Image (spheres, one colour):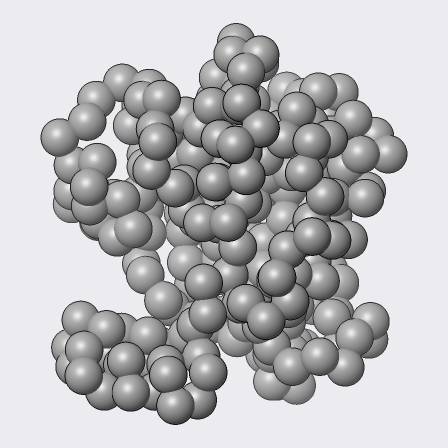
Length: 237
């Protein structure tokens, strides 16, 4: 792994995204890296705010509306594009969601952890709330400690996909009818004989679904959430 490409998909929720971006900009990263925001059809007002923020932090921004007419979410488009770029540079792909705040040592810590483990497909940070309690989507890991070789899927809240994984599984094979791909890619990593490591030692603060608040219905009104999910074809994993 010669370098890493850090990407932050953003859909509105600019206040949360600003916290994410400022934390990344303040990170201690020794490996060669690039940082790119993928603006997924945010409103014109939020696009303007996001563009100004990225400029102030010297972060690149890609407006997906200029590259594809596909409606948000465009995670698959981004993953396919980034895989090709990473393969061309022997780079790892480090995804940080816009509702996550990393700590100064998080990103380099994931890189170091992956490099120490040649069989690593995914190196992921556990997520915690503002009080440091493990939260969604890693509730199952609340009793885990250290670095865990996990057979469960790793969320892409803050995850490094290594060149080992990017070289063995072509994202063009992912199902275009889905919206999210962390489960599918986690399973493909394991199927390829790689290991997915969850770092409870590198927690990140997560405010779930800041960019898609309708998903909070899953906890407040599960019946309405699943009704929307299935009748409108939303949130397909």
